[in-house]
Image (cartoon, rainbow, N blue to C red; front, side, top):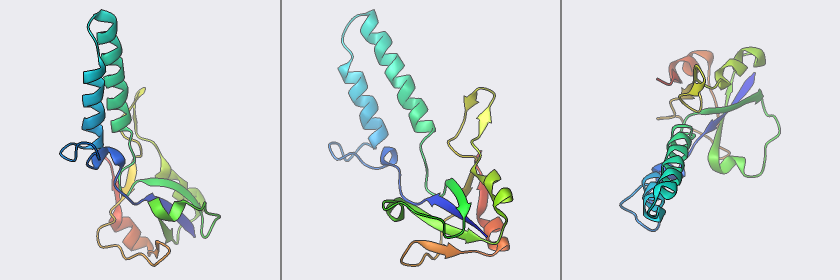
Length: 146
């Protein structure tokens, strides 16, 4: 059996900012970059570079349902994992399961952080944020990012 470690919370970039609740974290950071840029070509070049880096970081963010790691069933866990992740056990061999951890690439450009994600809607997790799925249930929930 393999255990999928799945990101199970909203990313900070998609959440409302504490300072500006009307903006997401991503939009708020971009706003700060815009405001910090001073006059002059050098400042504008730095601003454009920082905005580009922020856009790439946003594209690469973990999203709810992303398969972050695949490991042996009931493998060791860190102390902070239950806060952010769900653990889904599936009756599949580990070698086959590792393919679901791929990063999606388009040539040299990475389009998404992870290629596969699991639809978490309606999934019942126990108190330790664990679930056991049959192979059929897993295949129904497994999606490919576009």
